Image (tube, rainbow, N blue to C red; front, side, top):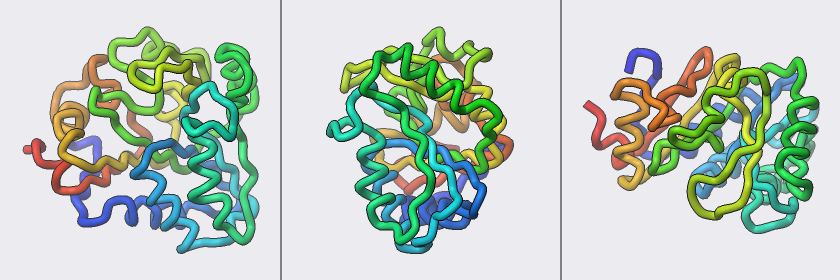
Length: 221
């Protein structure tokens, strides 16, 4: 676990919100994700810092659905973060209303020259992070910044995801993981040998922080 700062907290979502608010300075590039736990982090970040003028917000991955669809990560970010801000950031949205390959190509081009100051990721029970799923060929893609991805779990819709080299260049990569259902994936991601069967074990930033509750951390040594 030497490559990851493990923090076991009573309220890891609040801690993630604090890191986001701290990073949300003018000129910063932030990559956000989806999921119920990160929604609470976004609410905390908006409460702590309402002026995000000059910040650039991106998505670490997105489902190929319209922006107002219930499965859209952008919709979650809008409802829990953007709508609560007094001064919103510049938002770079994956064009989920277009076919996956086209949406990925557009996002890849938009990402040229972008290096993230912070990325907030989760981990699925299967060990995936962003839309990098176990043993998928996309794990080896290093010539693109964003690629189309097939879903590894519900909802079974195509995805667009950032690639491992983009996360590797990120100044601070934050994993936010809660719940006993994620405990085995957390163990495999942070305490076992890195493996393509657990993509989160392969995805690191220049600095990597794992914010966990006690249940998610219960299988760590």
